Amino acid sequence: MADRAESLSVPQALPRPVGLPRALAFVFRFCRRKPLGAIGAIIVVGLIVMAAFAERIAPYPYDDSIKGARMKPPSVQFWMGTDNIGRDVWSRVVYGARISVTVGFATVALATLLATLIGVSSAYLGGAYDIVVQRVVDAWMSFPALVIVLSLLAALGPGLLNLIVALSILGAAGTSRVIRGAALSTMQNPYVEAARALGAGHWRVIVRHVLPNVMATIIILATIGLGTVILAESALSFLGFGIPPPYPSWGGMLSGSGRSFMYHAPWMALFPGAAISLAVFGFNMFGDALRDLLDPRLRGASGRPS
Image 1 (cartoon, rainbow, N blue to C red):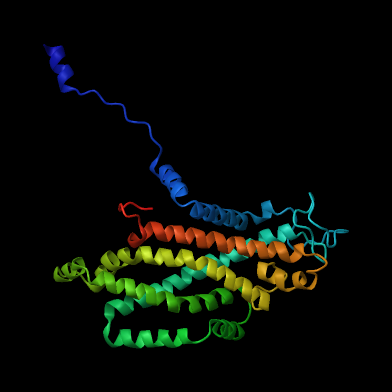
Image 2 (cartoon, one colour):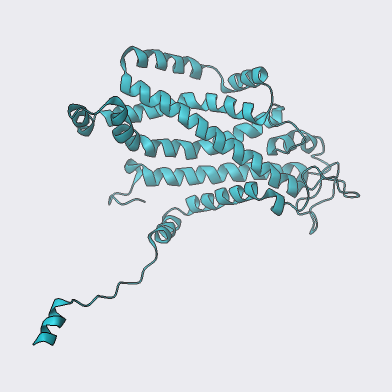
């Protein structure tokens, strides 16, 4: 009887079903439902790896002129050929990824921070503050983007930090309008009024109730804006307002010797242009897929994330 009671009192552990970790299962589900988004994520990860380990990936320094290798076509030794002064194009494209990734992420981070401060504060405070801030934003958005960036860079001077600041100021205006709209929609929910009725302060309401509910919108805007920032940096470098030489940038490679020797050595312009297109495609596809996952209005009819 004691053995029987002991067997009844101690339940036997049931074997757990063998399954994939949640993160790995999410990755597989994301790849199956959003194949273009998965390709974009692979491109983004590849760009980040190239930027972080450029010294190990590039076979030559970006400013090293190889003796006897002037304007060599693509080959086994030089994957993307060489330029007019004997520099390896593949090495310069790899180092150019560092510029694009740095400018892209830093600009989006700074622009998103400014836009969040402007949009959330304008929506929460309202009144005269909201009217004044939105009229300033309207005036800022009415100017052509290229004129604003060129004016800021002419005043600040060329350089990586100045380029990031100029692009951040330009991108924060339009983004703040979207964040303001999302914050206004969130503040109409009953839990915000309940938090105020319970005596929650302004800072607590913003941090605990408003910001978490607009975070999906902020992430979507940031990921989609990465491709636009990289394209803008390439355009400014092409015009001569980007990163000064000798450090390579994809737009600068197109503008200088790439444009001058396009007919004699087309690979000097084709590969930097392809790198720009691939980077913008990757960030846009990944941003679109992330938007579909985070925006409830874009999910499937069954209510599950697509």
